[in-house]
Image (cartoon, rainbow, N blue to C red; front, side, top):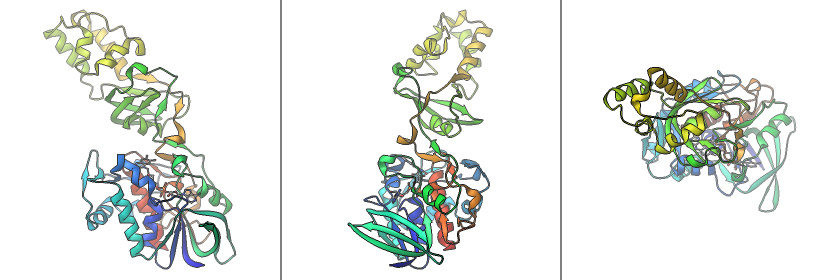
Length: 391
Ligand code: FDA
């Protein structure tokens, strides 16, 4: 069969691209359903964009690359689409927009937009071979046990990254990119929990608290969570994208910087209170109980026993708690893949390969990775729209 555009991957970017392509479009995916990551995202409510999206919220070897596509498709344009489909939404925190009811509404919306644009969708379809015959791409695909030859002027790589292989993630886009001469930068798991030696935080598992986490020069003020395997929660997921193996992460448990003065004031009025009792007013009691073992801080005596120097040392330690993870949970649980198809070989305005006319790369497959908080979907939408409009 012959189509104008063949899109590999019916995820967030592929579906959005299909909704904006003119001409005949076929989208293929090996999964049983389209947009599976959209469906499970945001705890089933899909954090579909972030209204504060800026290029600074993305990691890439070329931090300028994402500007063009993001600049031409704003979060508010996606919100307008969501509203046109009658989907109710709310802002949760930090500009993060979620569906009121279910992420399935976003999948249905994308599916409806694809249909409106006249795009076909073949699910449970495997690609076995792809080549270019000098005038068009030729794909050999298998569906329902039958092999089809698809000829397409344009080929869009939208099969995402390697995160969560159990959900069908593969490195297909990277393999095809290399086949057509595009470079692929080193990939690794991002937005992923840290692991520590067995039992390190066993007694703290389930404890959550606000903090400022720092790694690789980036800091995030969000919640952290101790788990039986290590550290998770938004603050940890965010810094995991900046962390490199063997380096410590720094946790500031007093990001507002008011603890020292508060403890001094309390010492003046309630000197007979135990230091641990006072600390438990600011931090979870389980953490206070574990701090001596975790940090080496003695935490003995009453408030009145603490000199300014002792209080200052205590607060400094709580503001500069360094921990070196053994690693991360890897692609098994990572929300995204850092690195990917090198942006050097791609035109930022259209997402078309510079040296392979008709070959487009969108979404997570490219070396553009957003922070936690709706940024990755905004990149998927914006890059999908940019390529779709160019096609
Ligand atoms: P995506 O992964 O969406 O789609 C790729 C498609 O290609 C899939 O349908 C897959 O089946 C298909 N495919 C892969 N290999 C194939 C092959 N060999 N043959 C055929 N088809 C193939 N982001 C955000 O902004 N807000 C959020 O709330 C969340 N939440 C979230 C939760 C969880 C658990 C995860 C894992 C991820 C998130 N994300 C997120 C990240 C977000 O899901 C991700 O960045 C986008 O889905 C990327 O869109 P793509 O279209 O590039 O890939």
